[in-house]
Each structure stands twice: as C-alpha cells, then as structure tokens.
Amino acid sequence: MTASKVRFRFYEELNDFLPPERKKRDFDYAFDGKPSVKDAIETCRIPHTEVDLIIANGASVGFDYHLKDGDRIAVYPVFESIDITPIVKLRDKPLRKTRFILDVHLGTLARHLRLLGMDVKYRNDYEDEEIVREALEEHRIILTRDRLLLCRKAVTHGYFLRSTHPPEQVAEVIRRFDLVDSLQPFRYCMQCNGEIHRVDKSEIEDQLLPRTRKYYDVFYRCSQCGKVYWEGPHFEGLARQVEQFVNGDTEN
Figure 1 (cartoon, rainbow, N blue to C red):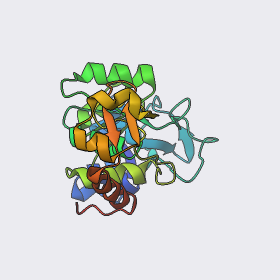
Figure 2 (figure 1 turned 30 degrees about the vertical axis):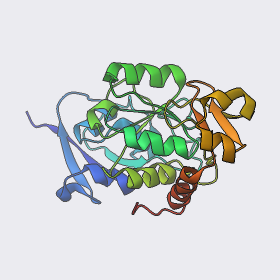
Figure 3 (figure 1 turned 30 degrees about the horizontal axis):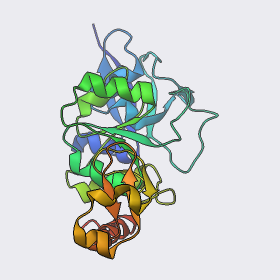
C-alpha cells in the first residue's frame, strides 16, 4: 500500500530545527493512517511551542487537524509584532505576562534575567515533570535547551534556546519576547527571585560590615531570602552589565 503524502513548508526560525535539505523549501512528508498535524510537526523535530500558525490548504487549522493525502501545510513561528488572534487556532490565549521557568542547565541565564527584572523560577534539581507542572500552574514560559521537554503534550508555552552562551541567550529572550521596553532592572533578587524593596538602614544595620555601615545609606532587601543590597562598587559593575544586555552586547 502506498503511503499518503503532504507537502510541508516551515518558515523563518522554524528552519533552525530542520536538516539542510529541508530548510526554507517545500518538502514531502509521507505517513500512514491519520496522524495529527501536531504529531507530524514534532516528527520533523520542531517543538509545538515554537509554532503559532498552521495553514492547511489555505485555511488556519489547529494542532488536532488530521493530515489527508495531498494536503499543503504551511507552518509559521510565533508572531511578535503582528496580532494573528482572529485566525490562529493553536492556543486559547497567549501568555502576555512574561514569567519564566528555566531547566536545570540554565542557572547563569536565570541570574542574568533576574538582574534585568524578569520573574524567573529556577532550581538546579528540577525534574522535567516539575517544570511542566509549575509552568502550567503558574502560567510560566519554559526556557530550555532540551527539545524533547518542549515536545511534551502538556506544555503550552516554551522556547528552545538556540545559543549555549548565556549573554547570547539573554539577547535571544529579550528579542523573542519583545522585552526591551519592559525591563525593570534590580527588581528581583538574583539569588532567589524574591522581590527587592527599599529598607531603612536601621533595620539591617546589624548585618552590615563596618565600612559598609559607615559609607552607605541606601539599602534594599529581598522580601523572600532577606539578602541585603546596596549601591557599592559592585553595583556599578551590575549596571554596566544591564546596559550591555539592553544594547545587545553579548561579548561579556
């Protein structure tokens, strides 16, 4: 029995996941039975979280659309600047509040994103099941280098980081989620992700070293872990790092 075929075309950054012979061109996909378009897309090694619009024979369809012999399928990545809500059929609603949860290999990225004022959950002992569960319960976007994690059926929002270099990963996240105008540096504790608030010096004076107590008067404290921050020499270095990230300088 001859297998059925559809004609696929993947656009823009979805090509990052394809082998050279399939990049930026139409190609045939053979199948038996009636697989869903979601299953076919993931068989092509593309996580469904990277996809925002599927056009089958000129009409927008959802992930549950079943392939038919002769279909022409166009698949598009997540749109940032164009509102495709009237035609997209892939999710009930997008996550417009960008809160993240990171997998265990992204500790440095977690600290960088918190420095820039992003709400980021991270533990170095997370199990994949925990990441997925907390992402769903707390409406967080999964950031990972594990493609198979994003292919889990329960995952609704996630992003596969292309780079392995943390500063470049920061630039990816800012660009991918259009965050440059919404950054609030020094809002979250780099250590635990608790919110940082101004605190009277008298409340934390007993925690300060003598020179810090003598020369500085403006202090902040994490509401979760209690870590104390002040604008000492280290602050200037962090401020330069923030500026580099905002300006897209990844050579740090």
